[in-house]
Image (cartoon, rainbow, N blue to C red; front, side, top):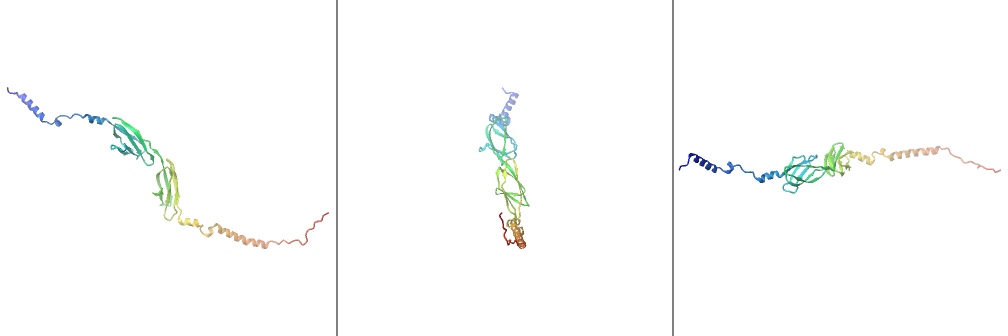
Length: 236
């Protein structure tokens, strides 16, 4: 018995479909591991009012993440993590936090300021400024320093060097204002300047004047004569 025309067509269709690769004709099944991996992550949101602070998540691990505030959200795997935030002039911040699947973990970073500001104004310009033996540039300058005492040195060719030791306080601006003195002026002051400016010069002049007057007074003073006859006291 010969197959019908319909049976022949169906057989050909089945044969053609069998030749099509599964990747092209059949949709791939979702891999359970990939879906689970997407769910097992969360987001870290760093809230820090200080700009320019450097943060490092999971320091020492291969999966560590670093950046600078303010930053975008950081996607991290589920679990426990560490973070360290630091910036010059502030105490470093460290914290341990947990990331939950699909959640946003908001971490508030409170950096504590432990420095102050120094402003140096010196003239006549230009005056070079050194702070703790480091060049800070020409005055006026402003620098952030750790709290405590610092050495500020101000120099200019032909002028006497000035050194100050300001005390820097937390969150405050300490000002140093200096006018440099020319070397020749300082030398003149140190040696006393011209002779007529010396205190002993006028002392000598006064002594000489007094010496000229005293003999005159002695010479012109009337002489006292002794009485020729002594006084006699008669008793009754």
